[in-house]
Image 1 (cartoon, helix red, strand yellow):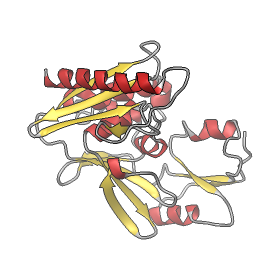
Image 2 (tube, one colour; image 1 turned 45 degrees about the vertical axis):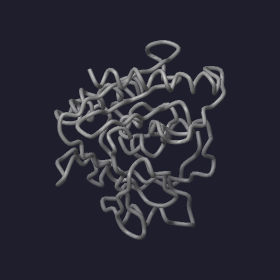
Image 3 (cartoon, one colour; image 1 turned 180 degrees about the vertical axis):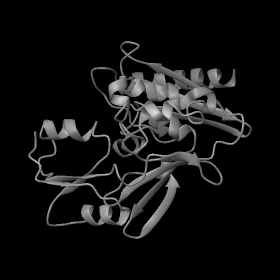
Length: 247
């Protein structure tokens, strides 16, 4: 494991940003640690010298936020699934896709912000946020910003602090996937949301990160599937997810 020489646990957002902006030492954010710790253990992140623990920044709440729902970046996936609003939204779409992120011990640690920042190509939960037209709140040296998740490509500096959903009324959700076994992460998956004036499909397993179905696709070629297979399954699974949502 990489040897860390710095550990910080700030209580103010400005303090956390100042620590992450330091140039004399390489510090990275620590949220749930489910992606960071394995990378440190395998020394994939050799240059990291310390972490900035985000657990005291007050980012663990799910609450009404004017025109929608604000989900703090430090909300654990288990809490997202069990919350009476996010757990039942669009036929329980977030609950269903979060269950596919990994076993319960991982979901008890992994965070919403970590899911957004890592943007794993096969993350069905990320695809569900895309289908729900989520917006990302983040802070950097210039202040606080909010942009569509579909336009978010990660941060070089700053912190994701929340996701914002404006779900409207009577949204229905659909979810279809293909995997080597029912418990595996997907080879390809589609997540659909339909409602009055809304019909949106997001895909994972067909690009370097989950994307909306109308975005350019660049499927990988690996032991689980060729690009041609993934393209074909994306079309099949999109139809299945939409049919499930419409029903």
